[in-house]
Image 1 (cartoon, rainbow, N blue to C red):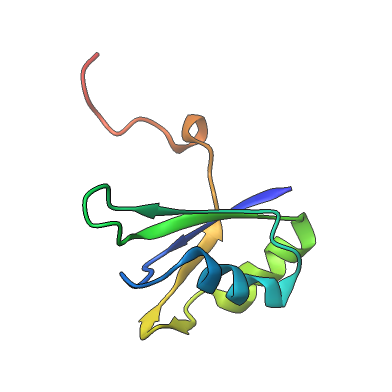
Image 2 (cartoon, one colour):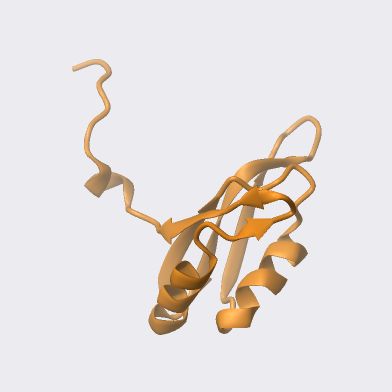
Length: 90
């Protein structure tokens, strides 16, 4: 199972819209779109869970594709521990 990061989603994007888009490449096992706590609108990013080969096909097929007038940023999610430090207190 791979987790895919999708960014640059339009404000009006819903989980159903994104699931329909990614299901062209295989079975979507899970989906989570970040929403603003006050307005309920999409914050522009989310994650999708798919099987490995289906996830790779979705990344290759959808990265840079226009969705609701915006080019999507689609890539494999990198766990926090592997991202490295970004500064802060020591």
